[in-house]
Image (tube, rainbow, N blue to C red; front, side, top):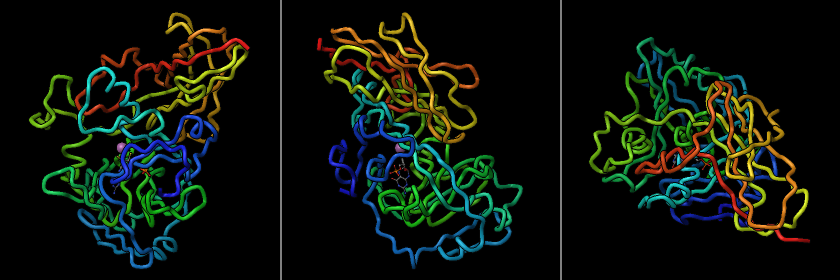
Length: 362
Ligand SMILES: Nc1nc2c(c(=O)[nH]1)N[C@H]1C(S)=C(S)[C@@H](COP(=O)(O)O)O[C@H]1N2
Ligand SMILES: [Mo]
């Protein structure tokens, strides 16, 4: 489906929600399109690029209506290698602690990286004459989700400060290909360093506002609730809206529950720090965090991409658990236990990950 690899883990067929296998995700710095995870709240719309228009309105001096040729002709082209991570990534480890009804048990692979091409949202907002009063920039898309009652189109917003940052794109290409429908083609927003939910696909309207988007996916979903809150009756005004991505990491190879031969074995995975932070160190442990060794980092894809890590471990025959934790440029490290992070919607599990597999004598 949607031209994804056969080993893709499909959480839901309609709407389509799927993440790659760990082995497939581990293969490359830029995730191939057939491997990139996809998260949808409603059916994927089919939008004809030749009739697509982007409306820019709200607190701007002149409203704009741009078609694709104008967007491409009137603004400087930009490319950013950026990782997208769903706020629900690694929810499976929270579900294992206490059930989270109605939310898919995403693993660590709801995280992928692409080279996005388009124009800077900031340039388009500048052309529209963004007014001083505008504090938020909202995005609207035509796909309809029946998660809210009554059903609503998808939408969301970012702060003016983020919207004005040059890495935020209106993108029409991914890894050099026209943006596929399932990833938001013909044009999507890409908000590097923020939860995937803010990177609105099939964007048709950009509105400068005083306050955040009133859309369900800004106002109700993607808020961080305390563990004891009832998501249906929570005082949402007191529950923060998620924005930048938390520092996180996981092991991709070897896979959990796999069997690997004893001896020197390469263990690898990713680490990612959102927004204005970067990964500075990744530690790996085979004694559940009593002692650590430092992994080698590969992070030459720029400020907005994940960092890949690897280390060689001489594995002895027995059940083995690899634990990983990352540190960011503020000196912060990931928290140790997922239990302390459990929340009713299962967002932002960035606890140390533990991957258990069997090592067999050769
Ligand atoms: N219009 C629209 N945009 C959307 C969504 C959606 O359902 N509809 N899902 C969001 C979420 S939660 C994530 S994690 C990313 C996933 O992008 P991808 O499918 O390209 O991986 O898209 C975001 N943008
Ligand atoms: Mo997401």
